[in-house]
Amino acid sequence: MLFPTVLMKGMYYGGKIALQMLVYIDSSNATESVPLFSSLSNTSTPPDRFYFEVSVVTGKIRVQLFDRTTQKSDIYFSELISFDQMIEIKIIHGNPYPYIHAWVNGTKLTLESGSASTNNSIVFGYFQATIGGVRESIPQSKGVLFSYIKIINDNNFPSDTYASNYVTEWVIDFEDEADPFKVKTKRNNVLGELNGSVTYQPEKIVWTSGNTPPADTGGGGGSGGGIVVPGNGNTTQVQGSITENDLPVARRVFAITEAELTIDGSQETTQAVLANAISSEIDGSYTLDTSPYEGTVFVIATDDYGTVWQPDTAYVVGDVIRPPTFQGYVYLCTLAGTTSSTEPIWWFETDSSQSIGTAQFQAKPFSRPLAHGPIIPTIIPSV
Image 1: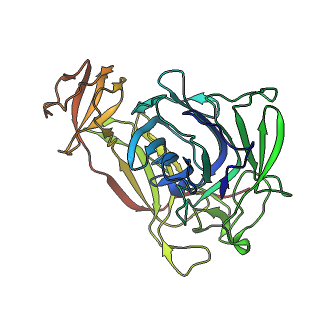
Image 2 (image 1 turned 45 degrees about the vertical axis):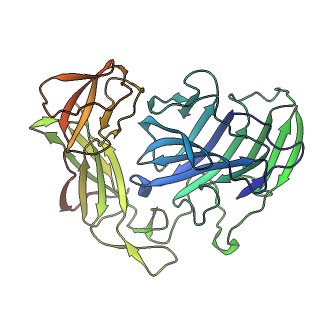
Image 3 (image 1 turned 30 degrees about the vertical axis):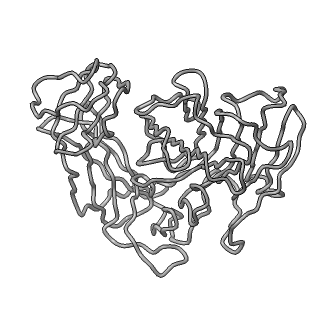
């Protein structure tokens, strides 16, 4: 969906944006990069200069800013989002420091890596927003359901009585069955509308009530981004524990079907990620809800690959980084601080921490993903 600027209903110049969305992301995207929002802006039509992009990458929110082909910011937030349920994501760019902030369901997220600056332009005359995608590429995200989205060219979420000639609010309410693609605007408390140019296939759209995607025809009603998940309506689970060097550890664990499943509306088949979870750091235990699937699955545990080391960047205890040229080790932050401006000489001794700038890190061998299976899930019959 593309929404261009219209006089007195468009966005004003500047480097601020506030974004709010209600969105459901299927767990089949747990290991994927899922585009959620992209804006383009320039004085020309179509715009080709400033880009503001939001995505979910392997469960974490990522925000990127570009000036044409020059990337100005690449930001990750630490906490993992929840899949298979409607969540509220809020993001602001602008003051206060560190200039970019994010919340999920009202809880503020921790900046994991990267930084933003008020010198970054986002709105610069002509403004275009793409929902559920990046720029104008088609196809876009799959296994994603949007219920509501709000875009404001400011660094906060003003109340209904907020009045300004410089701040414009766009709202798209997909739950509005009469005008699900209508953009409702407000500037200085004056209401208006934008008519969006919508690229879609009407025969592929199914309207449904509630906060979950339409049920498929696979017997259990489960869905994985267009993948038909068969089942008999029962609850199924896989349980276990993860250890490393005989000690319990917190690791992300996935359940993947052994069999290839049908892709809805296609003759193709593929495996599906049914569930993922983080094992307990106390005893290493995990429970994967694989409902309603009753076939055999493979369980895959992955180590924290971390993010690529960045110069002059603040890290907190628990952050994991890796060298730009991976050498088999990752580095766990044990003392918060800011990295130096030059890349360190990486070490492989694991007994103690070493300094990178004012922060300290401890080397740890990266454990390759471990797979176990095939496993038959425990079936808990529906009552």
